[in-house]
Amino acid sequence: MNQLILGDNLEILKSMESDSIDLIYLDPPFFSNRNYEVIWGDAGEIRSFQDRWSGGIDHYVAWLKDRVLEMHRLLKPTGAIFLHCDWHANAYIRVYVLDKVFGEKNFRNEIIWHYSGWNARLKDSFNKRYDSIFFYSKSNGLSFNGFTEKWQSEEEYIKLRRQKVHIDENGRKYVLSDGGYGKRVKRFLDEAMAYGKPVSDVWIFDKLNNSAKEAIGYPTQKPEALLERILLCASNEGDTVLDPFVGGGTTVAVADRLKRQWIGIDQSVQAIKVSEMRLQKQQDLFSKPFVVQLHKYDYDTLRYSNAFAFETWIIQQYGGVANIKQRSDLGLDGCTKDGLPIQVKRSDNIGRNVIDNFQSACKRFDSKRFDQQVQQRLPVGILIAFSFGKGAIQEVARLKNEENLLIQLLRVDDIVPIAKKPKLRVKFTDLGLDAKGLRDLELVALGESEVGIEFYAWDFSYHQPDGFKADVLIDKVGTQTEKFKPGSHVIAVKVVDNEGLESLEVMELKVNGEVHSS
Image 1 (tube, rainbow, N blue to C red):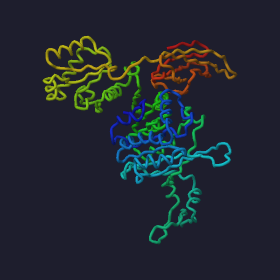
Image 2: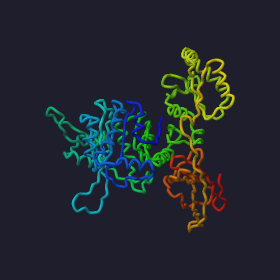
Image 3: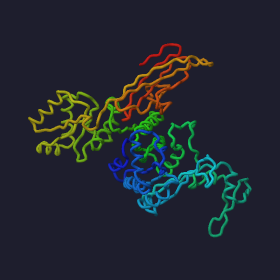
Image 4: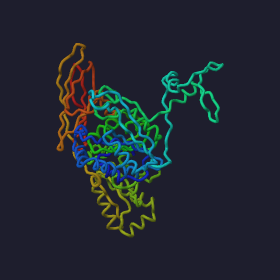
């Protein structure tokens, strides 16, 4: 199940299954000891920043090495890791972290990501215009896809080969190359160019500017083309990609688009929620569902989420194993790690009939185990729901007292904490018509939460069947000024609080008419 997880990545990595990941890309905070590393500014990110800087370079290396050790455990034998860093600590990271954990023999490349631009004229050094991306495999069994680029022109090919071009009797251009054993063979330009240009370990991609189509306002956001190359060279469709410092969500967004499974982790609420909205904007009918794991969860979001995704998620939260088949499962949705049946009902006020059906399903699932559990006065199964009605509770008590048959009832809030989502209201001010007949409106979102507001996001062409597709992804103030053509418009705004819970408000706007909430 694709998932975004809020929390300390070290603890989350420790809880994950060994040999389960095909590719890891991580862009950890650089060892620059600068406040600009604190990008989101929320409590989780600030805690992480302070933890990294409670000591010098030795402490930073130890902090990172603890996490890389877990990543090595998680990788499959065919897997690879790409660690993104810069000049502040790249030498330390290669020698004291990656060589120690993965072994020098599993070093594949130091990829140089070169980007254009310059700083002020430096008096004592050249401008630093690159990052390092260290590429290591877990073993010699690395799954690696050959990767080529398109030649820009014949002239580029000829210039790089630095060989004389000949033309044969059919008008085909070729160069003479050493084919081995002292022989000279023809290399036809059309064939060579069709094959493509082998990619070197120097990659040239410009950094994103604020006007770039994919820019979300995240200062250290990496271009999708960079991550696309990494994912294409070291993973295949259906493989699982992990980014333990998900940041602005580029890795998971690209993985989702390239039909990889993915897991993104971050300690920042804002990073997780921005990544979630970024994924929602690009998803279509063919996209796989994903879940967002927070510290606390909103009842409405869980209660009305995708049923299968919720069943899988809540069973995993309980520590069980979800049934991924969805067919021939006797109505059961999973089991505990020792094989006890679990059923999930994404409902409130579960009735007695559910108890009767669940009891029968448990017996059909494993009649021998069922009888043993009854004899030992142990639960025959676990039923999870949002709440249970009086009839269900009474029937469970009767079965226990009269038939020695135990069914364990678990409420969702017994497994995960549920909190109140923030309140939200929207007001607007008509600023009048501009010279082109467009109406200027100032829209103000006012959120209230006991834990504080994190940010707002806006969708100026909201269409309910498509879901929320943010046009403005990060609005820390909650105020937007927008121009509207005459006619009807539907606007949606989301507010996200400091625990990641959110509320949505929808406005139907009629230019030159009324504005009302719906």
